[in-house]
Image (cartoon, rainbow, N blue to C red; front, top):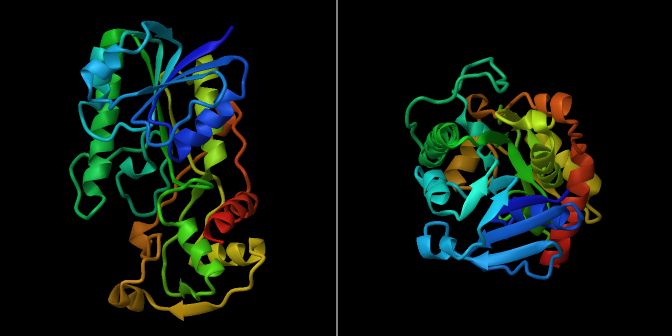
Length: 305
């Protein structure tokens, strides 16, 4: 039996990796909807349709299909889920929403699992609107799925890293290494953070499509390794075949000089989560950070060289 899967988005980072892995499987038939900036038509078991998700006429051109699952990688604003379900020909059995682990309410000393409370109001700062919209989308998903008899699944990833990442995080470091620039290390930064390798996130989506027990569940995606700027830089040095110099800096210098370090700096901004539920229930295995970074380094090195 083949799984018929609708993929919204899918040509950039996580979506691209998911489509690559899913299209290799004989039991997956993908209907991919994106704006066509990066064509995916050459992958097997994949039909690509060019449409904005807010274009009712474009969505109407999709085949009338009963989808075993919809994988939504590009829902960012309230109304995105309901609009899709209102205008999609055919039906969906399970709706998998890619949210973010940032939705959790900040509580000192608490490392949240999936039962922890989420934010209940719009916060402050540049990322606040993005996070609040994800909170609202999660609510919308549950409401729409309850009305339509669809099983909701929510994935809340920590920092996703790996090849094709368009966010200037690991690529920022690799570019500096290749160009012979120093790596700034904020030694007094008190923050700690967790990651999930993009391949693991793609495998998590596949598990949520296949496993009946995933229906109605929420899963954090966060590997157990906890890092800071020092251990992150040490891992870079271990996987890099180009020696690089480091520059000790303070948090004050980072802020004053506007150094674009990609991760939080303060203990209050630390991003730690419990990601074991998906391991216990769906059998996901997290890639060790060094192994994932070695693959990531090689991929980005080939770009910047």
